[in-house]
Length: 213
Image (cartoon, rainbow, N blue to C red):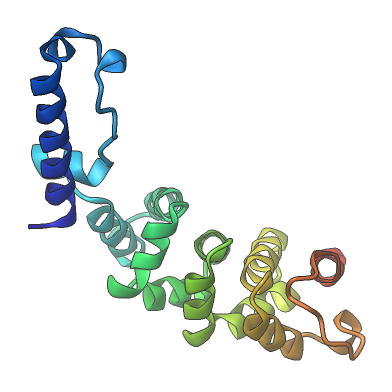
């Protein structure tokens, strides 16, 4: 039984027990009923046949990779994907779904808007998420993001790449060390930056944001 259906079954059992103990609960408004443990969207989709978040994530990446879709439609797919991975569980599922590699690949797109959205999604995926931070570092995205932040001709791309780097290195020392080794000395002044020192991280990131091409 999948996770959504299992949760749905558990919710049903709890609410059936509540109704047996208090028959009046069945006639009350939803807000007044006793067992208000909510069920997630995946559980509802399991009941009514809608796609799970995992399926929507895979569909979004497939659309982004498609050679048949317009740039506009790909950007819509990126926007949908970014909203989905705002949830930590969904961001962590990117590994099992095999979505890190195709997402990182978009950093090399010839379209500036695609590079921007790819960096944005990476920044969202790793924000306050150590598991995703570790995965992004292992997958080798940091050098590509540093290159975009330093060299891309599009200012929006540079800004989103900087955002992604900032999200990646905060409170995660291994990624912080990797990123700082790739940045010119002017950004690190030969000093080791503590990833948990937000003032020190902000100093580096602000210098990168303010850098002129």
